[in-house]
Image (cartoon, rainbow, N blue to C red; front, side, top):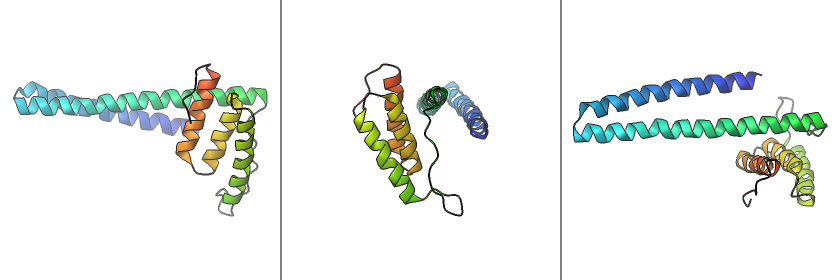
Length: 151
């Protein structure tokens, strides 16, 4: 729940920022000189890109959470079997061991979104966020019946 609140607060702050930046862009355009109109348009592009990115990220998080809930209902969520250091960090060798098993599961059933979901969790635990995101995107695409992009 804390992660959801943090995400919502961050998104709200970003939206306020985008509105402020957008209003400055409008003010520059209203000035009417060629230079300020050019800068105003350039400034307005930033909030548009930011809102698009925020929207796509929010959709991704929502879909990943829906898959997690569905997998939990099936009893298929990966169990946290990782060893941890005294400070609470995940032991690297333990993460690598679990990752190897998850990768083998995924290679055995490449069309099953569940294996891709569990592989995404293993990537995340191994601190490989870009690959975790790609694996989760593939899980979402497989779940939705879309053809996933090549990994």
